[in-house]
Amino acid sequence: MKQPILRLALLLVLVTLPISACAVPSATAPGAEQAAEAPAAAASPAPSGEGTPAIPEISPSKVKFCHSPYLDHTQSIIGLEKGWFEELGIAFDPEPYGNIPSTENLVQALASGACDVASASAVFMLPSVKDVPPFKWWVHGDMFQGYALMAQPDAGYKSVDEFIAEGKSPDEAMKLAVEQMKGKRFAYPPEAAIKGFIDLALSKAGMSLEDVTSIVAEDAKTWAMMIADQADFQVGGVPSRLTLETRGFKPIITSQNLAQFAKPSADSVELRSVFQDGWGSMDSWIDANYDTMMRMASVMFRIAQFQNTNRDEALAIHVPFLNSAAGTDITPETAVVVYESLDPFIPFDGQAAWYLDENNPLNYDYVTGSYIKLWEEKGLFAPGEIKVSDISMAKEVYQEFLDLKAEADKLFPEAEAAIAEAKEAGKDTAQAQELLDKARYWYDAFDYLDAVTWATSAIEWAQYEASQ
View 1: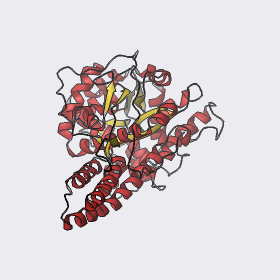
View 2 (view 1 turned 180 degrees about the horizontal axis):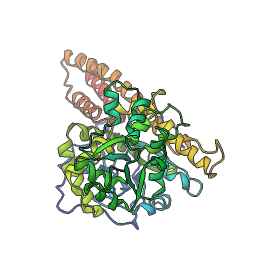
View 3 (view 1 turned 45 degrees about the vertical axis):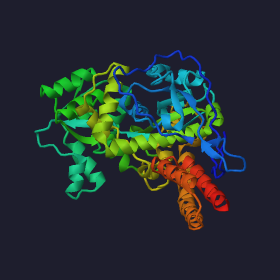
């Protein structure tokens, strides 16, 4: 695997991807508004006059992109509709929106080359890690924290957050929240993953299912029971939580509560109730298309920022695409629950806590490491056989973004000084200024890779213009 390196040279070339047919269904969004023309993009050298510095350009690239059919795996539509991929020379294949394979076929689609880039979570690739060629997840956009014990809204039950607001410690708050369930009617489906969350939540109060009146039923029936007041508490999958929370039912303890107050260690079983979602590829694609990967990562960060600062506009793009492409019927009101609590999208600066803060329980190494330990316990891996770095390079990519950002911060004043010096000599600095303006545009779009390239070119052009 090619290690991340700073690209401080002027000339950067994007490798153009081969176009090939995909065997998975094409994602379409009937009636979707096409993005406006993107500004001219540029990182391989463009022809210029003899003896003049080269002007950087970005070569066009096609990426076989596979969404997963969920709201937390289709946000790339925002970048497509806003023209952010286009201005970086990136088109999804098949055009215009890529593919949405079924969840069960995603691993095979990625391993076979039907997908260059897949939107999923690396932890769900773990069972297949020995059966497919090497892969890496390289950027993330959100944190799944979807499970929650839901309570009747008007029965006076308090949540973990409410107990903490009253001055209780996190451990006391979780204990008190769960103790409210003693002897009460508790509806839940029989799924193993949900059962694991239930056992973990009840253990916070030293309880088990013997301490409640269990009602085991299909997921849809459990939330119907809550609405009919036939159950006091409920836990289910994502659709049932969305249904109940949009109707005012109260989450008293969530996956996020369990994880955020866990010990910062891969040994914390509480971390198995959350995970980061993002984009991943086979190592072979990353090695051949590293700069494309970096530019796509910048769009992920740009999308996450937009989802937080322009939520209504983001939802107006995001929700219709998901419904059209995946056959769902999500409403904007339901999607707000996903954005705010169930699956929050985290901007670039906020992700520093995942990769750089060793005291944060949600540190990526701890969360992903906890899932690796889960499969060690199940006997799939020997202890220490699989490491986080075997399935993810997201931490290294994030650090490279920080390094490139710092380099751009150094280059901007140098470029400004070179332009000012040329102007004082009465020289025409239009080309240098244009390059610097574009460098700042890339910077503001989290594309620090091209910000460095354009800023470097601006300096060279200012020096050239001063010499004429």
